[in-house]
Image 1: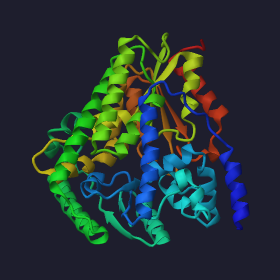
Image 2 (image 1 turned 90 degrees about the horizontal axis):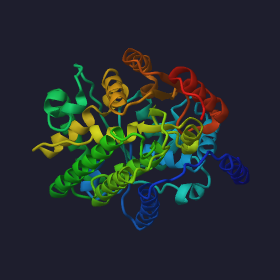
Image 3 (image 1 turned 90 degrees about the vertical axis):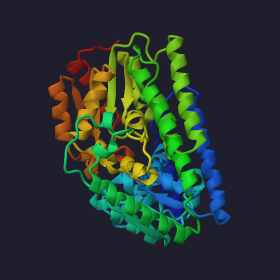
Amino acid sequence: MPKAKYSTERQNHHSQKGQASEKRLKTPKLATSYQKEWFLQLREKVKNGEPLAFVNADVPQEIFRAMDIPYVVNQWWSSVCSAKQMSPYYLNLLNEHGYRQDLCRYCSLSLASAFDPEPEKGPWGGLPKPTVAVTRLTCDSQSKIFELWSKKFGVDLYSLENTVPRQIPDKWWELAPNQWEALFEPHRLDYMVEDFKGLIRFLEQKTGKVFNETKFKQVLTYVNEQAEYNRRTRDLIANSSPSPVSITDTVPAVMVPQWQRGTKWAVDIAKNLYEEVKEQVNLGKAVVPKEKVRLMWLGRGLWFNLGFYQHFEKKYDAVFLWSIYLALAADAYARYGDDPLRTLASRFAGMEDMLHMPPWNSSWYVEEAKRNGIHGAVHIISDSCTMSAGGTYFVKKAFEEAGIPLLQLHADPVDSRGWDNNVMTAKIDTFIENEIGVNPC
């Protein structure tokens, strides 16, 4: 296809904008502004010969931080492309090159962007060519997507293995920070430590950078400090009624520093968020002063339409105050231990279990719903993602047993091509009115 046609396609899809969210706090603005500036500086560093790693979200980014190797996270880049309304254009390119329509879009959107004949017109100048790519074998598609992506750019790929549990823990969120040796079986931690050592050797060989254990320990300390502020913010919101913030406030303020974790900046942003939310509470400010409904959004954020949630604030005095992003940042990341590499292994050993495997995820969801006084939950299910779609029956069953209404929506968090805003809005309207029992204001 000629470049002129691709340019027309790009313009057409870019005009199909979702609804932008209203920013109530300063912290999300600071975070997103910093991330854009960081990315522009990153492009310059790569242009001048600095190495760059392209990694999956469940790869131990703390190792790269300790080695001064900049990295771009696959799912973060997908969220940026989606927020910039570029996903229809990129995903259509992917389909035109023979890849199936139902391929997991959240993980393959970066691969799709690699087919752009004008990559410099991508978000913030486009993704620069990396030096290495690193993923974990957490699903059947992941390894192939990264293999194809690395071949497209002509870079070396390192694939970390993924272990699975043989026992079901009780209240993992209470054990994870300090009792992780009991939470995760020794064979899982042993294997991951050796795998991480292999990753370090690979990175030293391919980038010329050296692993710095002193800096590595500092990185882990920063991550724990960041997680502590996230926990305090989560608890503050849970204990405040009406809610001082919604997920449109917290998601960008939490996710951007997650990709920068292990830095003083990320700690400061997490602290800023906590202090700003606390100030909202002290001043008596709320998303909706006459709050009637407290909602949780299960699953990934609707990146192309973050303003979608605010419709329900105005119509029902209903607030989406809970998302996996802040809650997971509060419960799943803090780790304390004497062996740095093994401590890091414990952070990632059960990450996929916590997110996608019942009863790890379902029991945590219900616990969080009770903690936050949730009246109803909306669960977004991406059918193209086996990890996201798996176990949804058990999530619904857990909420039914807890007596908390749950609505399951089938939609993709980054692909707006199949999204009908009127239909989805109507489904949640009906859910609020019929299942929760609240009428429009």
